Length: 78
Image 1 (cartoon, rainbow, N blue to C red):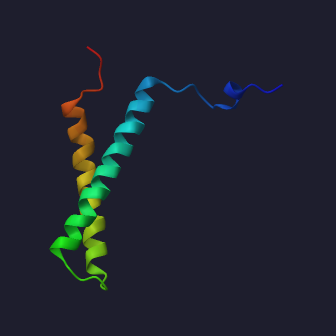
Image 2 (cartoon, rainbow, N blue to C red):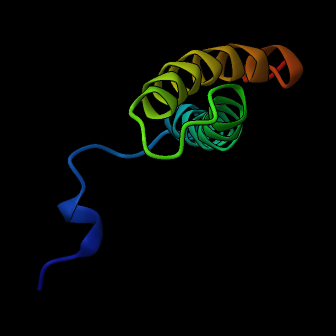
């Protein structure tokens, strides 16, 4: 019988999960802040400009949130 742990390519370390969770949280924050700000700043409901500005803002904010989360809650245990 095949054990589910045998299906994993490598064991997950707590550090890997922190990076994944930090990336997921920062991406969700970047998307939820970037797109509303873009649609408020460029109110064109039928145009492409709000979508492009929203993507640019989301990527920039995701990077900022990713770096900022590490400053607020450091991932290294002391």
